[in-house]
Image (cartoon, rainbow, N blue to C red):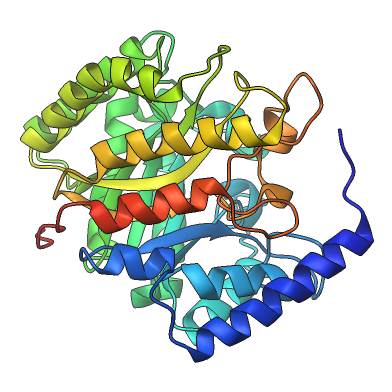
Amino acid sequence: MTMIDRRNMLAGSAALLAATTVRAADAPTDTLKAAAASKGRRFGSAFAWSPPGADAGSFANPAYAALLKRDCDVLVPENQMKWQAIRPAADRFDFSRFDPMVEWATTNGFALRGHTLLWAYSKWFPAWLNNHDFGQRPAVEAARILDQHIDTVTKRYGGKIESYDVVNEAVDPDTGGLRETSLSRAMGGTAVVLDHAFRTARAAAPHAELVYNDYMSWEDGNAKHRAGVLALLEEFRRRGTPVDALGVQSHIGLFKPTTDAGAVAKRLEPEWRAFLDRVTGMGYRLVITEFDVRDKGLPATIAPRDKGVADFARAYLDIMLSYPQLGDVLAWGMSDRYSWLRGFEPRTDGVIARGCPYDVDFRAKPLRGAMLAALAGGVERAARER
């Protein structure tokens, strides 16, 4: 994988800070947050914790903080609110990293989303929860652990967090069925766990938007996943589970070689719209929670790759933003420098994925322009109702 030269990093950081200072003084209208606000929405991003000045996608990195301040109204922790980060043991919480993130965000005028109160996937449970002895009354013990977690987090932050991904990724994409976990086995089924989580969250944070978040997407091969999510949402409505919105992660991708990303998007549009129509027809709102573009099918050469990414993103966002039920739009990081794609889904040719609005040196890319145009061109957001 290509390494980033420290001299270039420092130069890019200095340039970004200087540009941001000038534009802030001029109250810029060409920002992603301004484009979103023009249609009643908010734009935002994931962010992280780090020691002061570290080369990280953190509020404590001045160069990255400048990106957040320039383009974002709302932030979400990338990893620092997940169980693995804040619940190291059944009897212990650790907010030492998330607390300063919340403090910085609120002090600087950002709204906050919470991610996530329950990642319903054993692979991402802390080891202690996978191996927990639930005792003679397993359902009671499992409910106690879940209640304690949700109550502790939501009450600690109160109105500072306005929207929660209450449950994340409960649907198995290979089968469309619900995943089993130690909690579901103890409580008598996954649906029981999910309903309990949402009801507990509603009671503990009645002010907050409650979201079911998943990565079902519009690319080929996701039909079972979409069907499973629709079935789950239908069951939520049937049971009166207090779910306000579907979080559409939107890690969209071009995985096969193509020279016409727009044509790919046009082919995918009908089935994707049918899915969104079903979701909104049930009365759910939509949130784009984790947007970026996976570019594995595009050439390594930057110009055509950036064009393909921008064209694909613009087509996707135009569809999403044609729904008045769509609220917040969040990227899963602002710079390729810190994107999860580099570690989790590296390109086979070793070049750095270019799926974020800014490159590794914090320079705006065609993707940012596509996002700006889509946000400005979307329909007005509908008034939010419970």
